[in-house]
Length: 250
Image (cartoon, rainbow, N blue to C red; front, side, top):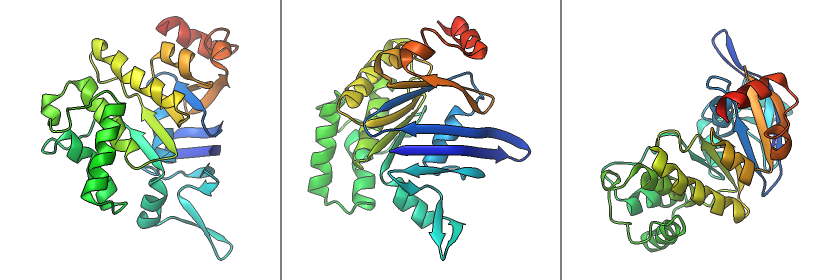
C-alpha cells in the first residue's frame, strides 16, 4: 500500500528527513515512535503531500506521490494533481481542525459534497453512519464547542473516513487531549485497525503500539533507527538509542 525509499526533506539548510525507508502492506498498522523533532510528523505530511520531498520517492497504492512521469521525465505534481491523489488518503492531526461554525454532521459532509459530488441525502447518511461507528450517534447536530476534546477528535476521524480512503494517517491524535479522554480515541482507532484499514500512526502511546501495530518504527534525527514487530522493538530493542528512549517513556 505504501512504499517509501530514501525519502529526504529539507527546510533551508536543515535536513529533517535523511533517507526514510518504509513498506506498509494493505491492511497493516505501522506505528512510528520517537522523540519530538525526529521527523515523524514531517514524514506523514510528505505522504499526504502537505510537504514536497527533496529526494527519494513515495508510492501509495503503486502511484508516485508528489511527482508525475511526463514524456519520460519526472516533474512535480500540480496542486490539482496532488489534491486528486490525496483523496485516497485520510489524515487526522493533533488538533481537531473542525469548523467551529458547522455541526458535527456538516463538518463531515463538506468534503464528500464538494470533492466527491455527493448529494445531500447520501452525504448525510454516510456521516450519520460514521458518527455511529465512532460512538457519537445522536450528536450530529452538536457544534464542536459543545463536544469534549475526545469527541471532537472522533468527529475528525469520521470526517477523514467520509472520503472512503484506502490509507489513514494519524499524527499524534491524542497528544492534545486530557488524559481521561485518550482512551475513547484509541478505542476508535483500534476498531478501525480491526476492520482492516491500512494505518500509519505517529504516537507516544506505547501501549497502543504494542497492542495494535503490525510493525513499530523508532525514528530519531531524521532516520529510522530500528523497525520490526512490536515485541522486538518495544520488548527487546537492539539499538542503544531505542533502548534509551524506551527507558524514559515506559
